[in-house]
Image (tube, rainbow, N blue to C red):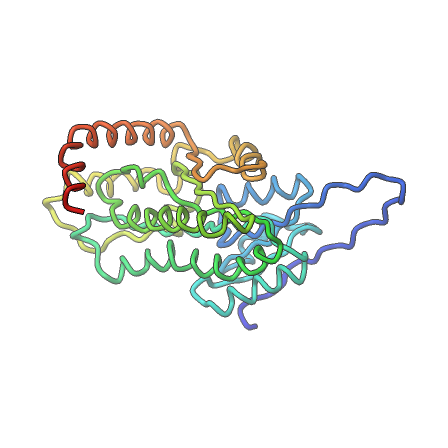
Amino acid sequence: MEGLKRMSSFASAASVPAEAMPAPRPRVWFISNLTRGFGLELVRQVLARGDQVVVTAPNIDKVMEAFPDGDAGLLALSLDLADAGQVQYAVDQAVAHFGRIDLLINNASMGVLGAIEEVSDAEVLQAVEGNLLGVVRMTRAVLPQMRRQRSGQIVNMSTFATTGEGPGWGVYAATKSAIDGLSEVLAEEVGPLGIGVTLLEPVPFRSDFMIDSLIVGQRVIDDYYDTSGRTRRRQGVPLGNPAWYPLAGVSSVIEALTAEKPPLRLVLGHKGYYKALKKLESLRQEHMAWHDVSLAMDHVL
């Protein structure tokens, strides 16, 4: 299929003496929309473990600059997640090449910056396409193989912004909240089939996200100068260089995702962790304060 190409091949395994203990089977990771930062470091560390990786990106040549010597366990494919046919073909190529898919990492993310009133329909639809529909297409394409295996882990990238990132990120948080809801329901649907689901909720990583994957609302309303406007101004200094760096924690994330029972939700970064706890406590207090109204509905339902 045009627009999708194989960049490297997998070398056949060396013969093993019959008396030797069989080595653990390498896991096969499928990582979509690889760009920089967390995803790139994840690929490096997964390959270093001896696992095999399928990576996809719209511009795979740019990504492969990070692997100039290639790797026998790496298969790189050009892929536009907006094209359902390409998505299915990429999954078919991965299975034909490695024989299975153990982990799907839905790595796509499209930021939208602007107050709700400022953001246009077109900008909202870009975010829905980038953050939700691509994930749905990838998940639908991979699930038949995982159902045949009766095993697998689907990992969706959410964000700590769903716990309340602040003015200007409303549309972005909305699309990522949709991923949260989708993942929770999906976990119930595929759990009985031996398939797990994990939501990764990271703080911003040092990457090209703020340069390559950010839609800034074109409309600016002066009344939002001190709310979403402040957020807009913060993003300019420095672009693409948030304070959190992904390298240190990636190995721990890999251990969590390959555990016997991976978590449904995994917050990454101290800021996100404590913000999530704060939101849980806020919800508890609000529910307790209004429990009479909530329980009064029992007489109606």
